[in-house]
Length: 628
Image (cartoon, rainbow, N blue to C red; front, side):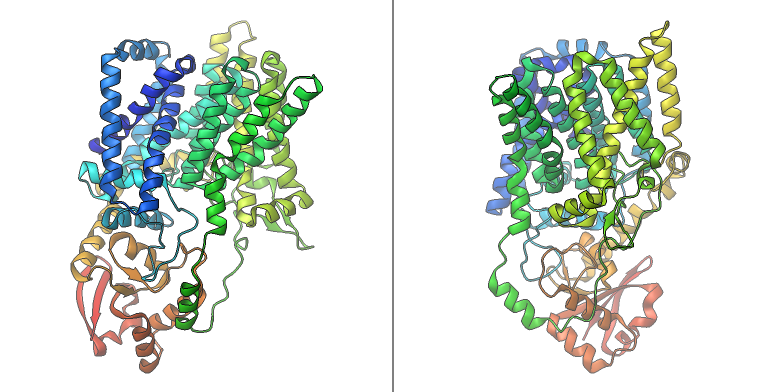
């Protein structure tokens, strides 16, 4: 664990050195503000190396060497520049108790660790592939090449893989221990949003602490999509809204905004699109205002251009070239499709939790009786949360009229989101623009983010006007934090359940990690590298996560792969107990399968292996067999 946290601590140094040299005024926001933006700058510094590595198919050590070089140069610069004095002075400016609360949260997260099931299989599988084969944008599940559209050129995967390579730890371990660092970044993102809107550190701290408390039980913060919406997007919104009021810093703010859009394109391009949808109307309105006052709207035009920095990655995801030969080969190999996949919106979330800080993964639209999409208020806290949030936003704008531009920008963005989600016609338009119902539904997380920040700001600003402002601020903060412990934020556990999980015995907290490690050792010792393995589609992502092999098809994780439904149907036939051997033998030959991996509780479905193969080994509830 210590090596993992040391890596992430050192990674902030290149960004801090850049901020210290080119944006010294950022220190006015306090240590957490500087920390969040330092990681943004470090990511931006390393992103050209990552892009070039993916484009050229370079080995991972090239990127790892760039990480080391950046840290070493930053250390030399900071030591020779006596940055320690500035850093100590910066730390002394903050009160102690917010750091103690945040530290307690991070300690609990470190004890719980990162999520190792569900979509984590896919993310960790890509990290494993980078470690084994270097940089590639391929679909990691199929032996024939297919471009992986959604997470192509992913900077976060490169950093996670380099962490494992440089610290000589197992990638499963480094993933597990990175969860606490991810929560720190979410806190920094919300701090930046709260502080940028209000220029009040207490507002920033309260927003940060409320969101990490509400989402304490969320153990998948280190996912690219969750980290993008929990850290990068709030930070970008904060800089964008701040540009409306802070004229003296507009150049740096807009450069930071473009950098964040560029980074979001490399982490999860959907959120770069979200940023454009939210801030484009705001900056367009600012341009109209400047034009009406007979001013040149140059800065607003520059802001609109900054929002396009992440567009190339989204365009590649949408329009990436698929070779004709691959399509023909897939059609030749694939049997007629026998599985009809359900639409993405069939499953609905029943939670009434406030989805902010990344707790959004189960957000879905409903289909009304007339066949139109609609988002239900109870999916983000219900009408009370929406009403209180909007009142708080208006209240904050009234209390801080000197920062009216920033608050009006936030209000316009919230209005666009509210109309888009809760108006059936506008919701249908959003679905057409984003082309996926779930993508429109997840915008509710951003609305929750804006309203939550507004609630924190109003509480602090109102308390400042009372006779005993410090006492009133402290009481208001404690009330909001206590309320946050009763929310789940779409996390898998409540705050109480999170505490129980954090204080559970060590063997219980590491049980899943130990199980995955055991399966990794089993598969590595029994399956040749590059072999195609037969396993159920729902287990395929886990097999590829821990083994350098391919599968026939996974239940999800493929994007734009021709004939994937037919492949999944063939997997169903191969793993069914009643499939005649001639049919099974033909399918095995079609995909070149000589090894089978399956859970022991389904051994009766694989009884045919006794006549046509042998068991090579077992680990826990998993077995691997070789076919003759």
